[in-house]
Image (cartoon, rainbow, N blue to C red; front, side):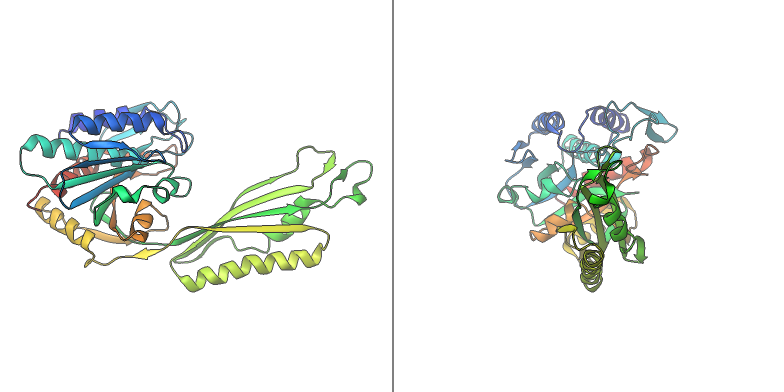
Length: 360
């Protein structure tokens, strides 16, 4: 049986371990120790992801990511009614440590029950928040599971992500010509001016029900008395529709060509990278079928909703693993208003416990 007090204690311990993207080593060491204490054969792959296995037969994979976004250092969690929150100067880190806590408690409760368990694999990944990098570098030769449940969705664990978009990131480096801004500005070509002409030609915000476009970072210049020579523009676009993705790629390239005609002496260098590919699943998907059976044991229904974000589930499915992403009780992720619902977190741990039973 899931122990609520122990579950909350585990969540508190995890969120107090600083693990911003790229700095997950302390978190990985802690999780390795916890899994070993549960009897798992566990280690780190070459990229620093934590991989553990209990049993030798066909396994189910349970997964969550170790990293958090900023501001995520020195987190001080506390219980506020039926939620866990942090001080308002930091995120809580429930994304995705609520998912990890639910997995650990579910496994602990299942082992304590004394019932026969399925073989279980666990993958706790690095650098999910900056492009699913840990999952993309995961040593899949150490993963045997054909079905996976990823605890990394927002909301209750009865919410399954039915689809996720393709995500393309882009960098545009704009090169103008430097000059002294007060003495001879006419000899310069401002990369910021060129960049502004480009940005106003690009789409922004929500394009349609399944598509978004965003310019997220602009870096240019260093001092006020010099015409800036270099400016970097970073952005992304996402859509569930492949044709729309192609059209947006063309929009970016066409905007660049238009600006090159306006400023023939400027240089604009574009780099595009597909961070993850879209997927769509139905109730007939093997991973959803596993979850539906578990929900039935718990006397719960479930919903399937599309998401505009990506998770390690995108990568798992690209590698032939039937992955379903479920809610992990986290809300307002990536903000200082983030909170974890304690009743939903208990339900997530209970779901995990049921999933690893042989009878399910």
